[in-house]
Length: 502
Figure 1 (cartoon, rainbow, N blue to C red):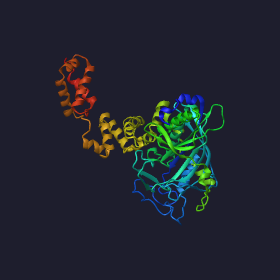
Figure 2 (cartoon, helix red, strand yellow):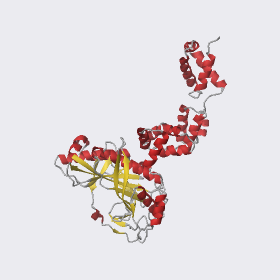
Figure 3 (tube, rainbow, N blue to C red):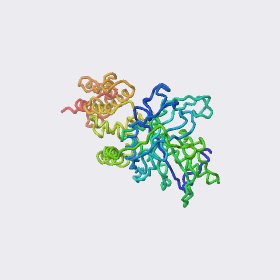
Figure 4 (cartoon, rainbow, N blue to C red):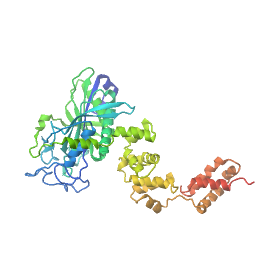
């Protein structure tokens, strides 16, 4: 089916109710892997961070990462889940080249956290509650790189390369209950849920949750049912969607695709699907297995996990302020509208702004730079503001240079450019590029005299009392000094020189 074969979104919703299930995999920010001591640091040579355990060698035995267990409990508590007093791992059996053991250590019917919820706020301020079925611990797979072919996928590839550095990295999979009642807003609810979950994960400090790096990935399960029917339809699962925009687009596309198939008398196939960024479409991957196909059974090499109640309560008491409550507080403190606060959230700029304020910048200036120049540059590079190679402390220093008159906004943007280019700290960039504002009377006076001499007609207007015309002369001074003049002082000097003689 092509994009042109879809029914319109409005026609799809006129006949069917969408039901969603979202599965989000979060890569935990632990120093070592889930069941061995191999490093999780990114950027290593392929297969450098491996050992007999994460490669599944015979006779090797896994050991549970205690920090990963603590992170799982904290995530569960933040989602309002019950924490299991006793749970265990299971083997999920399947063959795939990037799974070195031919099974994955996961949790099946005994997750560490279950029965929670997350409230998400939509664009118009409506709050939608998403139920959480469970959050369970597991290990990540390796990474396959397919060489040859036009799509970068296995179909059409000449050969594939396998990197097991990622195999065994701790994951938490968070699975929603069926999301019903969203109607036409289902794509928006899906996006808002993943955005809110990402903020929650970051606030806990258990993962950077950067979707563009695969640290947070969403599988979108979707089915349609005719209006008035209670039985769910057959679902599809769009795998590994890695941006908020893509989560929304994948949901919308699948609603339209399902509706087109059902409306023409066809049958939905239960399968996994691939999402395509270039046109927002999905294509078939493989037939989706049922749970029994994985032949789950208790992991014989690991003892059960039994979090003590007192320890769980200590973790609960130490939870940070939840993101939605923090946004409400910050919105009031910063004097922002609902729309402005949502813009900050959607830009992923809340934490960078807070860190810049903590580094000494005024709140309005921190927001100005992160939501302006830095958000623009992040958008151009296809990343988030926090991922830019500039620290909140450096942004705070730039705001201080503007505040003390060393820079104006135009020069500050050039300093940001230099820092992002790796030219050093803000003060070093100012020095190397010669960006300080020209404010000494000699150099500035000479530029003012040059501007007056070059624009006699405008100068005469100012002498005649048309003070507003001085703006053109200030512009000329700024041009002569490459934007480095102190505009306020230049204006004062122009008016002094052109004041009517008594």
